[in-house]
Figure 1 (tube, rainbow, N blue to C red):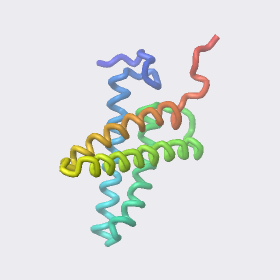
Figure 2 (cartoon, rainbow, N blue to C red):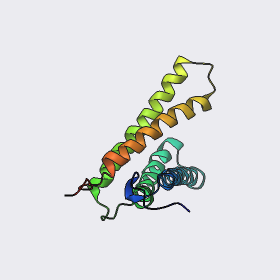
Figure 3 (cartoon, rainbow, N blue to C red):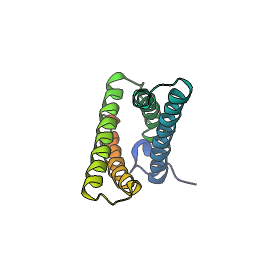
Length: 146
């Protein structure tokens, strides 16, 4: 069993548990995104471009709630400023992901698109984690105490 006493991860979580929580929370947001997209296109007949905007919005809220609860174990009540910081990080990571994907695809036209997706997603995931940990869910006043 993983010890909860290691303070190298937020919320005094063991780093492995913290990493798994990050992956599960992000994975849950991805699944919400996919399900909402499928529902809006298949059941309601919305165009995928319009449906994707709604799906991203719903997934972003799900990701924010999952990350604050499980990944970063934030005990303060949810707030609009926290959500806006989260959304800023999420949209930035998404833009980096897409931009890097496009650059790879243009630089290496013969590359398998899934390879470009994996590379761009890995870079965006690191950026997202750093942004979430040090900006969106930064623990105020959690430094050393006298």
